Length: 293
Image (tube, rainbow, N blue to C red):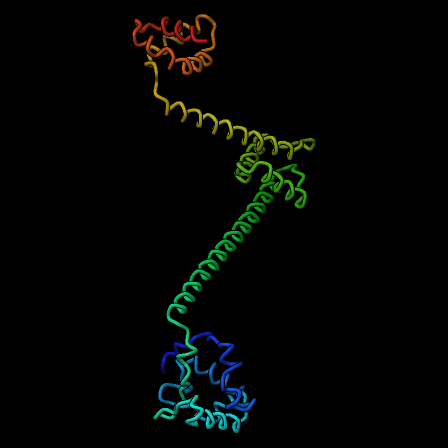
């Protein structure tokens, strides 16, 4: 069977239809059939046929278009008349719509439509991927919540209330987004094995405290790493040996070496020339830094 390469739609020109000769050449009923013929022809590059070289039997064409056989035949005969010249009867008995090229979409327009389809398909695929990820995330969260409830249910003296504890877990996830709640609950439950809960214990308060502390530790660790990265990027203005000697002197005077270091960093551009011309002793460096207001 021939592979069909027809269009999904074709341009139906308003002026041609309203002001053209078709309304005068065909009856109202034949006009309706003619529009059906146009639509059918665009399924097969302008041809009205069952397959390449095989015409539609009139009875089958009537059933396909849901029109009376007599009306179908009258319309074909009328459109084949030389003065009407809307259809051409091929040697194999198939029909061809003569005006097909006039209604055909340009290659440029077809290409643009294909590009639009590709873009739309890509957009739809992205939406589907996003929907799948959200659904997977929701399922994973539900599974995680159930696992947490299961862990708590095995803890002796824990006052499990599924509805209350589920709401409690969701609140923790919102309040402490950086903490892996499931992992933390596992640690807490392991701790309760060594130090069992008492009937007067407040386990939910304990969980909140553990989770809160975990977030604080994470934030402090992030801060320390950030500071470490900043200092690592800065060039050392003193050798470590000389800097240690400076710190010994500062500590001996009861000073704060951390504050001195910050002051020295700020003052160094101003004292750099004097320091390079000095005897390079730790006492000299301290004196130069303290001289900067």
